[in-house]
Amino acid sequence: MTVPTTSEVETADTRQLVATFREAQDRIREQVRRVIVGQDDVVEHLLLTLLVGGHCLITGMPGTAKTLLVRTLATALGLVFKRIQFTPDLMPTDVTGTDIIDEDVTTGHRKWTFVQGPIFTNVMLADEINRTPPKTQAALLEAMQELSVTVRGTTYNLSPPFFVLATQNPIELEGTYPLPEAQLDRFLFNVVLDYLTTDQEVEVINRNTTGRLPEVEVCTSVEEILQFQRLVRQVPIAEETVRYAVNFIRATRPKDPESTEQVRKYVNFGASVRATQFLVLAAKARALMQGRYHVTIEDLQSLVLPVLRHRVLTNFHAESDGMTTDDILKKLIEEKPAPRA
Image 1 (cartoon, rainbow, N blue to C red):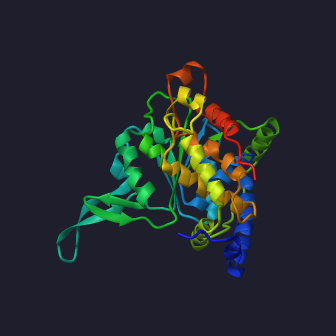
Image 2 (image 1 turned 30 degrees about the vertical axis):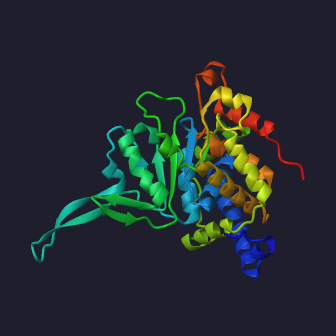
Image 3 (image 1 turned 180 degrees about the horizontal axis):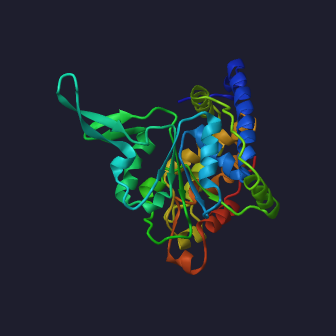
């Protein structure tokens, strides 16, 4: 496939669509800030998830407004929002839906009728996703990859856009089930919600203890979001930038010649080709959000942590030396600098 040039992308229609996107992006951020204090990086990553058409895993302590953030964003986007509280007794059919025997009152005949589950939506919040067994977690795999659900041999397509925004608690491990690697790999980002600053916490207290939260206005539509997703894939990227992304991902694999000494020492398994695709797509979306029609190495490097922190699996040497995945990736960025012009 021929990569479009900058001149091909910058047509009159495309420039108008980019201008519409920039305006919508500013309005969405404004609406989210009316309810959510701080967390600008997390909001940016959620918007990137939207533009790429991926899914996002949100890791944060209890009480960091994870659910409120997702609900507010879905409202501002004008999308249908549903929430599933994942629990140990949740069954796959509680997510996907199930067939029931329905009787026609006029004829008396019985037939199978499919009752849709909460997964039939635009934005699905999988709250505390690691609290349900792998059998139920697996019910999301087909939907996250193929945008479809199969029940009793019949496949039902989900209406785009479809996003799974899942939350998990990083400290409370009792009664939880680690997410399978196959499911983790389907998440575009793993973003971390950190604590707010002192001034931001004061603002949160003032907002939430003096009255009702403001209403959030709708800023875009399903049709516009699908247009934005198509626009992202038209953003050109230079051959050397693609090669940098490929070589960087290959460097996370300990048996690859591109890997570094630290990777060979601390990493069991590196990232897959899907990680490279997600990294490039997210970099295209980031460039567009910043008003550029081309991808830079800085775009790629700025997205390394959220794209790869859940895909690079460390070994016991890393645990014994206190090395986290983020530490290894930050060091790898230093050891794999941008190529000179």
